[in-house]
Length: 610
Image (cartoon, rainbow, N blue to C red; front, side):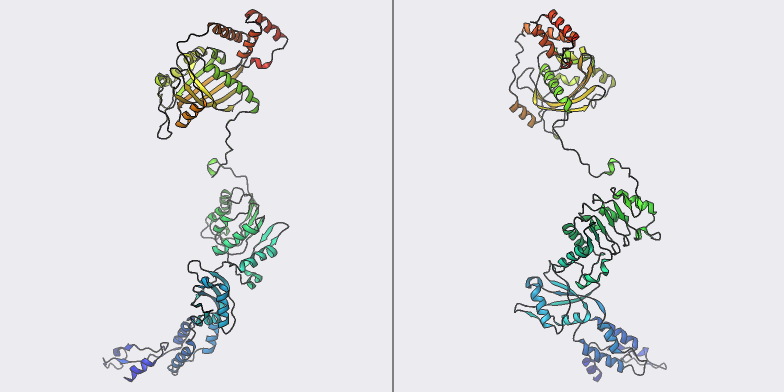
């Protein structure tokens, strides 16, 4: 009974055991004793050391007296065993241990930093130094750090004892951390920015020297402990560079224990030409992907990193392969360490983004704009006339013509469902016409064959000149290849006929008789709903009567113009002008033409066939 009472009066830190010891493990001389009895285990010096370490690690504040009494009892039970180390020395060593402690004050974000810190300093018996005060946005707790165990113990004792202007009781949680969070609060950030600008930045050559920043004693006096191995601190550095030092041309980040370059993907230094990450802890070549966006980065230092060391187990590539890989990732580089890089051969597939030129409605050289405007205007005026007889003067004797009808899927591009009628069988659509013989048959060759098809099989049309878009593809070898895109309406039988979208490619050549069409390819498809609405609002109705007889006098004049154009080599306009000035006297007009030609009085424009 006395043993049990004694057990109850022991403090919880008493290292003596209260467990039952089975008697059979302690009987000597083979005697049997199955009755359980209380036994107190002897405490050795190792047990004392272990106990003291556990007690000192605990941040309880009122444990000093308990600690002393428990040690006294432990030492008393040691008997005549060997002496342990001095207890006061052990306590002093642990109290003066250098480290970091995280102090969290609940609800400090709502109370205010000044009120919290003023109340804590007023309550504590001695002053303490706080570092990196910030507010946790999720919990609204105020967090700061101290690097003294005595300060940590003192602040923990203040838990629940500090009242802030009759508002609230401060709840304080203390925990041991390896290092403070390297974020820059609103008080420290201005000092850090001024330090970088005034002490580390050379305004003459726009160089920012951030080498070995962690060992800078001046920063330590501000309570700033740079940690480039923490992404949060690098984020702060990058933000200051982008805001206040965007003019930097040279940046030295050497000897800062940098492991990852991930945060540098947000670096926006468009003038940066030289960057050093030498003497750091970069182990993976893929980290340099984060630097490829810097447009003028030409020189990069990477020496004395694990990636460049020959004994790096993770690196199985040679230095030449590493340099080549980095150059592929950062193609604008011209030099890595002291190695000049050769020009890199790249293909279009290597380019992630291609800057296309601005789109323009037409692509026509300046020296061809006047000629093409006249050619297109005159050609389609003749093409839209009944019979299309006057087109005879526009084509070369060995010209070619092909037609392609495209029936686009209306589910992809909504179009009007106009039928093409018999014209479909004349289409030389290579996706539908597979037979080679039929392909050759549908390719019309020679002026008579081409004109016969245009007069008899191609429907009568009225083109909308406002819808035309012209692009010149080539002007080499005295030939011009250009396309005309636009809309026309079929007016063969009705003024409200189908509206077609067309693309026509002309190949024209300069000949003795003028500029003639050598190849003519037209691709047509049904117009979209918006195109139909556009042509209906822009083009007046065209009425063509199939029963009205043609003017016989006009036909004779047209025949004279065509004949005069073919024999003289002049175009339709000048041939008509010459006949008109001579009152349509063909022989007199021919004599005037020959006389003017001998005297070089005919302008060169007269021989451009339009």
